[in-house]
Length: 603
Image 1: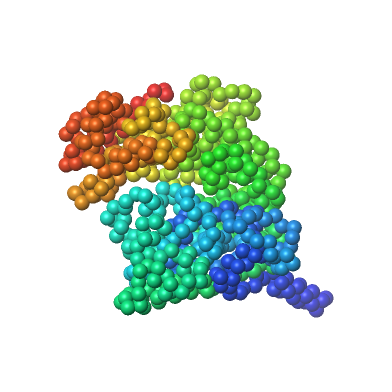
Image 2 (image 1 turned 120 degrees about the vertical axis):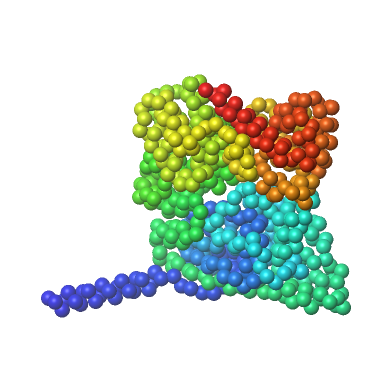
């Protein structure tokens, strides 16, 4: 009996070892050049669980810098598949040359491979935050040391939308920006830099078979130039990026889809920042085939806000909330698919109401101007619960309370203070557990008061804050809501204007170029109190005029209202560059008073 048990145990161990060997991923090395070719031929596809391409141009820049310096930049993870797996398209056009060949699904590496494909093949790929496709320049005169602000971002990171590229095409950079750019090895393309003799288009080096001598001659250099050998060597070094080798791990075809989804979640959960929704999305699609297409079709209905819905995954979070009554994704893998489908119907109804409610009542047409996408969630939940109670409409009293909560939460950065999921859960707890609707809203507002300490804004709250702060977004809402007009066109500011010339822009009231080099630091120069909102064409017309000059022109032409509506003091002493700090003090108080007055009117 003992021998039999021992024999059975040995066979079990052998079977387990054989299974593990069978399921173990294979490792191979593959060059960037071969990876790009496989993608182009259609041999590598994306699984449905992958989100779209989301990198910014600056992330592509920093990836290339890492590869140029031969730094480690992650691994590639793929899964062998048959023909029955749901896939999605890359952001780049692929050929269909993979018939009969082994196909792979890319689980980790999409952002890097898509970026490199664009650079090596000279293909247009749209990057986040820019109207123009990926395009980089290489600095032949780059310092040997690494510039301190180059940080390689992994595939999962979502950079802040306020991050700026090196500088904007058509706008002259200031001296600090010029110095920064000249210390970079790579920078985002502009026509002006491309005309310089020591900046070369990366796609001409990586994507075309030009000789180094041809490239250098096109920049006006000859072999007699003292820089010729150094530049040639650096061009050759950049070309070797094509042959940089990644370690590629291949999951076997026999691995079940659910297990592959778990591998995807575990792999992509390392080093992520607030991207649990992406991992939840992967788990949902492993159970519910075709969900991602439904999600993206729903996002399509939000027009210009489509990408915001996809990037924030707020509808997915709402789906989970209506199943679990909390906002975190820890248990999403345990939710039955039927419950997911029922909750999805509810989530769509709630989110649609919340977006329309916010847009119609606050005038916020661009959802990315919200201090947090979480602001939509309590409104969506309140509406759904309202309907379940049999109420067909929101009363004027409810609307005012909801808007008061929205404005207060928005301006105080309620969900931007850290532990945002826990804060949202506490708000959801009130909504789900309070039967009386009016009481629920009162409790929601009171809980917000306890969390932020006070509702009234003080001038000190405005001091040293920059344009990414919730108070700036709140000021934007109020200025639009109260009918503030553009100085040149005389029209009310609107996010629905057509053409870049007519888009709302942030305008430095005291031009940056006039303040630089004086005793003012960059925090003072870029403080909220030094900004107003204008149409793009007007912003460029003013350019770097002194305030005392263009304020007087506005006063003469349009009267005091043109200045006071933008919270500009009428005291001409405060228009002087030497009195800039006094101007800031005046405007901090004016901004605080404006926000307080606006919210107080909702009582």
